[in-house]
Length: 189
Image (cartoon, rainbow, N blue to C red; front, side, top):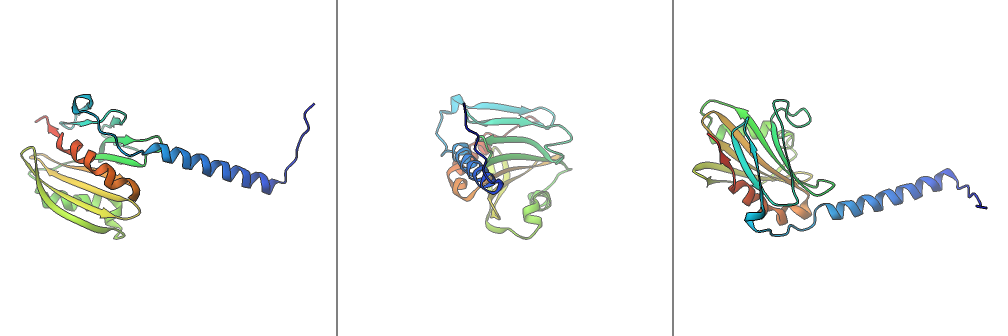
């Protein structure tokens, strides 16, 4: 016959908290292992026909597209790519219709679309211009509670932001893969 052990409720709470924190730490450690390099021919392609673009992403990552209502009510988020079970590394594609926007328009919208930049709690690390598949783009890297990089793209009829968000310990490891994903951006019109 089993003997029943009654623990004081305070000890039960402490045991639960310790088990929870250890479990969360374990899942978090599994969620964002250092990125492995996979040959480009093993990458998958996600196409968003409604908003006219496609991107490639590595195996083991998850890609989800969203319609007019966007991701969790954020109407601008049209694609989300994540790595890891607990989702400590995010890539999102934001979309906004616009007529002949400039890169400055997209960067200004990027400040509005990002609550982090809008709140004034972010530190800008860098802001630079580059070229991507015939488009002039701008890249802004900034830090708040996480590190972010936004890539701003101005097209004839819309504005697109491709964003990387990662914790400090992951950002610089995942930036090369983010650069490859961004380089795979292909407009459909």
